[in-house]
Length: 351
Length: 282
Image (tube, one colour):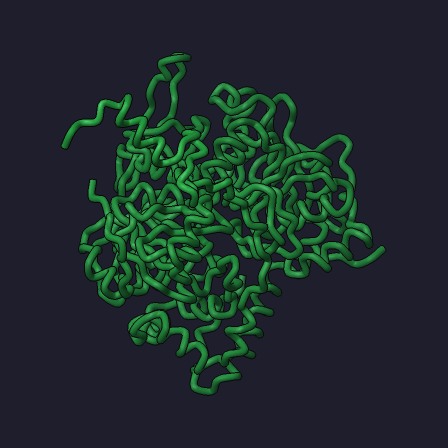
């Protein structure tokens, strides 16, 4: 297993996707609905990555955008948002009808269980057997029999439904803050983030802000992905817009409606993609463009007011082994007494 | 009596199915509205959670989706989706969950995936999401149906109701006493026979004809001997719902219309932007 032990992995989104994503890779979104890594998925699109397979619990705009740009051709999912009623033909509908994407239907629980088993290094994991009555289990998609199986619980002798563990090549993930080594901290809706990121062989991480490692160390319970999983760290304010992120911004429903308003046919969708993805160098330029079009006030109206978590006190006496007088509480000795003891009783080797 | 919308009628009827001290999983829309209405009226000790891992929320507005913490000032337990499905649902802590119905059959089995042959479908709905496990393993499920339909055979079997009826659900491994409890449509209230598990009409909404209900069901729908009219929402209930969730009161078509109006107001701020392709109506 490749470990990512560098101390400083900061780079741009463009560099991260260039360096760590290959055509044909499988990947997971390590956020769902909330804190979506849209700046990173836009970069996949700008670089015209091809033939990717994606795991996503529940898609909103990201799946439609990736399909429109022909980035993904295999999709494992449990849910995809519909903006309109029966008359709307969505980008997913068009891609499925034109055989540009193969879809594997899962439930939220069983899809995330595939990630959890993969994250733990297990070949499979039990899930709730009652759903074997449904077409989700009975109808096979492109993963064929490599999703659900049945085994005997060795303790009860009962038949048990299981799902196979998966390890995607990479995950895309957005969080509130990370240090430059990639210890990423997320709070709000945890949904699939832990298991989808840990299942993947590497994580491309964007964060609203890069903080000192000391900040991370003062609140380690917030670290959702540790640095050894993370290959790239991208500082990216507004990196999840138009989705919401606690401590930063609310969902931008109007912007989202503008996107969905364009999705009814390929022509208007491509126009939206040209303006907001292909026409933009990076997320900073996208936000500048937004401000130029709709004004600072529109963007500022989304900004979060503070609601601070009461800090967890990670304090102890923090007694050093040797205090400033050279005395150890732990040993009940000063440094000189310690060395004398080693000389007399510790069998010091004459160097 | 105050005037009310059909959404308010469904929502307030659903809220009456929730009891104090229960744990309820809500999605968005009517389910969230019903949970909050119950909590603000007869069920102050209700624990509300979403499958995204937000447990013990106290929503002051309707969330955009199951992972939207902007609807509440904090919550009591932040966990992830597998924690909800395993440690909470699979261990039997969920009393009630909600599901919106696309297609439903005689025994409460449901489809929220495809209308038409899945390999050449007419309409793709959202997909399974969390529905199969929630319907399978919650103590009770409250179903709501606005645009859905009764069918003889589901086009796609997404969520297990009572399977073939009788005890078949429990023989397939789902917990004793679990299952769909009630279906509230825009025309009436339906329940399930205790023995056969076949759906029947138990309440009819004010100003609805029985013939209208029966004609939308492709089998000979059973009717309760004690059929009553659905109780309309009280003025207090209407007031709470409109304060908390005016979007739900107005229904989906008006929601889309108001959103489009907001989009156009934004676009008017900027003459460079050309008009977008209009959003389709429901």
